Amino acid sequence: MKMLLVRKFRVLILMVFLVACTMHIMIDLLPRLERRGPEGRPGCSCPPPAAAPPRAAAAPRWPSKHTLRILQDFSAEPASNLSSQSREAAERAAGGGGGAGGGGAAAAGRARRLIGPGAPRPPPPASNAAPLAALFEHPLYRAALPPLADGDLLFNVNSDIRFNPRAAEQPEWQNEDHHEEFLPTGETSIDSYPNWLKFHIGINRYELYSRHNPAIEALLQDLVSQKITSVAMKSGGTQLKLIMTFQNYGQALFKPMKQTREQETPPDFFYFSDYERHNAEIAAFHLDRILDFRRVPPVAGRLVNMTREIRDVTRDKKLWRTFFISPANNICFYGECSYYCSTEHALCGKPDQIEGSLAAFLPDLSLAKRKTWRNPWRRSYHKRKKAEWEVDPDYCEEVKQTPPYDSGTRILDIMDMTVFDFLMGNMDRHHYETFEKFGNETFIIHLDNGRGFGKYSHDELSILVPLNQCCRIRKSTYLRLQLLAKEEYKLSLLMKESLLKDKIAPILYQPHLEAMDRRLRIVLKAVSDCIEKDGYDNVVENDFNTDVNTVTTER
Image (cartoon, rainbow, N blue to C red; front, side, top):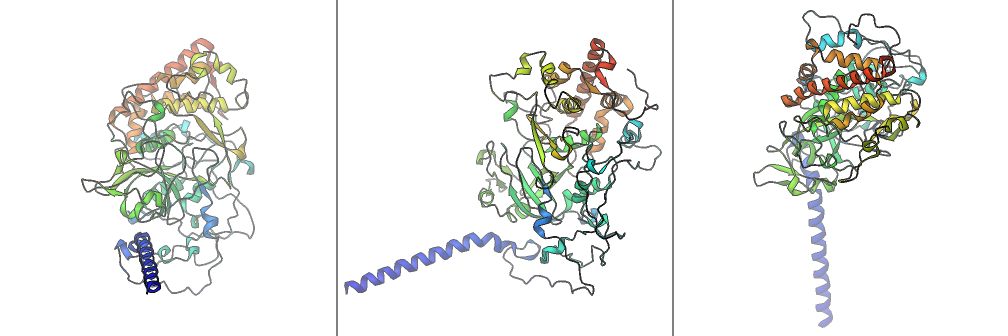
């Protein structure tokens, strides 16, 4: 009798264990079951829509999904090799898409350049043009690059390989209207590549993208319209960032909104604990383009549905578990990071919509290695200690004797970056990156600009120390700064016009725009003081290949 009771007890314990396991599995699978319904209806067990009938012509064999995803990466830190995920197309009518078919056959096996960024193609002249269009028609913005050799291109691509995202063979990759997006033949064209890939192919020794590359505007549209298929948290960094992958395999870094437009950085905040602002990332891209640097990857603002486009598509359990509903019935989450990732600093939607910036990824590090450099004028990132440059007025002389600053254009690149950061008020420039393929004779990539535009009522003059100490600047940069100080090309008006194109405009509070005009005058005064002290030819480096006779600016 006793043995029978023991057996019954064991069976009972086993049954309880099995029931607990079953409940645990069901709870774990619940988010995936909710996502299976078409058009976002949770719990729908309807069968997926029928696939389009097979075409008569056999499709060629395309690169694998893994091969295409490895083409991208975005990082402000060394040794980061990231992948990401994405969302629903919010504005199909805008024509975002990831690669429409185009004509043009190519000889088999021939490697050729797909985008020639050398001689820019100017837009057609227009009467009564807006200030921004008139600026880009100015001779200073039409100077040609040096001729590009094969070694000056980041990629020499075999154009006989045609991009086709349907290689994944998943039902959701097919158009709802079943229209063919690609050429039905085996012919190739750069038009069959998605815009993020055209952006990567266009990178060269001198610029991330050419002045009139149509793929950039199309890529900006993709960032706000492409469907997000997966989301993951970015590892490293002090604040929460999400990696998003789109339906066309494009990837972008998402920084959510943390401050309203009119809020300034609290006066008691150190620069290294300041918030990273999504609108600063957007404005930095537009400012970089107006300065004609073209060293910031394309960035666009987007209104994201936190439920459908983040929570329901993420496979990151650590991120998914931080979602909750606030007392005001808003969807919130906080993720995991070093600063501001807690319930007290949660990111909440209205009720589930949140603004953010999406920065296009650069090519993956396995395809295009980048070298990370410590900024010579890096701050101490300490509450009490000062950096050497803050106490040594002759610090620049030591820098100019140290590679790579002792030759080439790197010191001039640092001056460009200094002007760029001062106009934004960005004190957080501890490292910078370059493409390893181009050695030391290439530009600095202006990544991670989220701590700019924090204070419009204060000009941080310490950001200008590199310029004041070295007294060097490119002639092209100096002439453009003088041009942007003129009333007809006023920097604040150009920025306002450019930022209005963004989907979440207005991007900057008006006092921030006015602060840029004020800071521009400070930069020009600093250069003028250097010229008065050392002479024009010793301060202004002539970087023009030919004389710009049509430029009329005052020395």
